Length: 102
Image 1: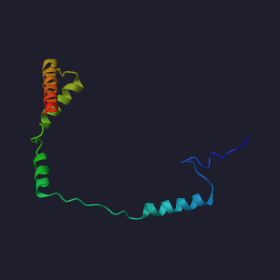
Image 2: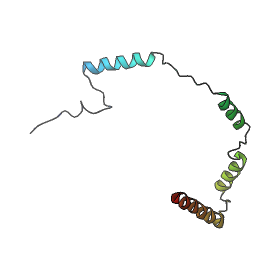
Image 3: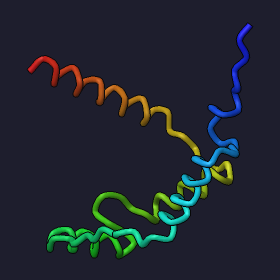
Image 4: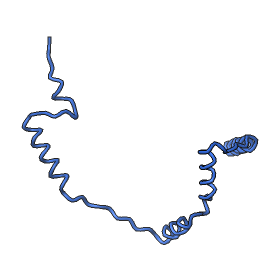
């Protein structure tokens, strides 16, 4: 019968070996060492996009409408128009089938 010391290999459990004490000291030193940071600069196009998005309503979607829908869902007042959803699904399937034929 072989007996293994399973506690030595278990991650997260403290060990009393001298090597682990040295590792702990190294980790402490690494934690106090300043870390280099990265910087980012936006191009003029990126700055224009960021500025247009800061106005509350961007060209991509209407944030106020999204907020109204969120509130309606949260309060249980949101009504799903199943006919509109079905029409959208059919249109998407048609587009996918036409794109595969090309």
